[in-house]
Length: 264
Ligand code: ARG
Image (cartoon, rainbow, N blue to C red; front, side, top):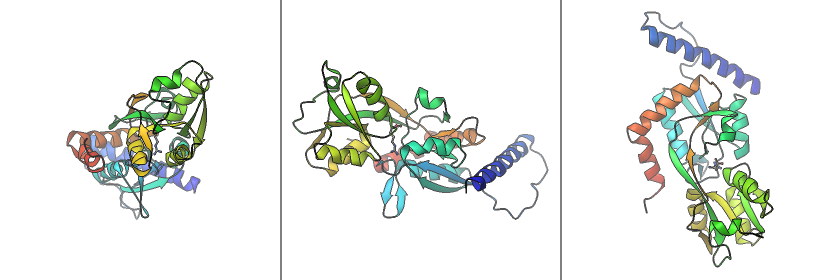
C-alpha cells in the first residue's frame, strides 16, 4: 500500500512537471496517449472529529476543510479522497507521501515548519479554555497562577496539548491528560476527571452546546492561523496553494465557512 502510494506520487509528480512544462512553453506537443486515468487524486489527511472543520455526517466526512479541499481538487481537475486518522498521524502521513496534504484545522507553528510546508492561511483559530459552570478557573491567568495544579484535558498532539505541556505542565503548574479526540477530553470534563479543556474555539462551541453545564472562558489562550500542510518542497504545494488563494479571493472559502459557522 505504502509502496503503491509512493509510486503513484512519483508518477503524479512527473505528470505535474510535464504539465507545467507544456504550460510554460505554450508548446505544440501533445501529451503521450495513455491508458492511465487523466487526473490524479488528491488525498487529504485529516482527523474527522473536529466540527465544524471536519466531522462525520452519517458515513460522510463533511465540514469546512472537507469542502475547501474538494473545491481545490475540482479547481485543479483532480479527484479527491479524504483519509481519516489520528491528529498526530497527519504530518507523518504527509511527509511519507501517503497523503497529498494535511488539512485539519491545523495551526501553523514553528515546530511543524521544521517538518512540513504550509499554504497561505485560510482561517483563524483561537485556543480557548472550557470549564464546568461554577469552576474556580475563571480566566486563562488562573491556569498560570502561583501554586496552580490543574488537570488539563487536550487532544493529543494539538496546539492545546503543546501549549499546556510547555507553558503549564513543564512549569509544574498542571498535569496534562491527553485524549485521542477533543470530544473525549470534554467528556472527561463533564465527569469531573479533568478541570478544564484547552481546545480550538469553534469545536469548543459545538462541544459546549452538546453538553450541559460547560462554559468557555472569555479570555483567549492563543490566536492562531490554520493552513494546509505539505511535504517539504512538494511539487503540489504551489498548485494547491494557488487554487486555495483563488478560492479565498473569489469568496468561495468564506461562503463555505459561513455555511458552517453562523455569525454571532
Ligand atoms: N488547531 C489545533 C492544532 O493545529 C487543533 C487541530 C485539531 N484538528 C483536528 N482535526 N482534530 O493543533
